[in-house]
Length: 96
Image (tube, rainbow, N blue to C red; front, side, top):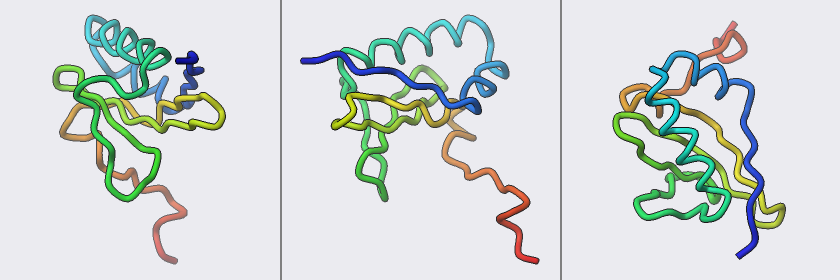
C-alpha cells in the first residue's frame, strides 16, 4: 500500500495548542500512523460525507478526510469528545 500524505489545516494546528502536551504527543503519533493506514482499527466513517472519518485517542477525537485519488489525508479537526462534532458559528453563518 502506498504512503498517504498528511495535511494539517491551520485551524487544527490551533486546536492542538489548547490540548495538554502529553495528549498532543499521542494525537500526533496516531495521525502520523494514518499515512500508512488511513483506516486503522476503530476508525469510524462519519455520516453525511463520503470521505470523512474519525479516530479516537483517549478523550480526544481526530476528524479527517481521506482523498484516495491524491493519496492524501487532511486533518480537519482535533478536539475533546464533547466539542469535536460541534460546528463553530462564524459571522457569515448568522442571518442578517
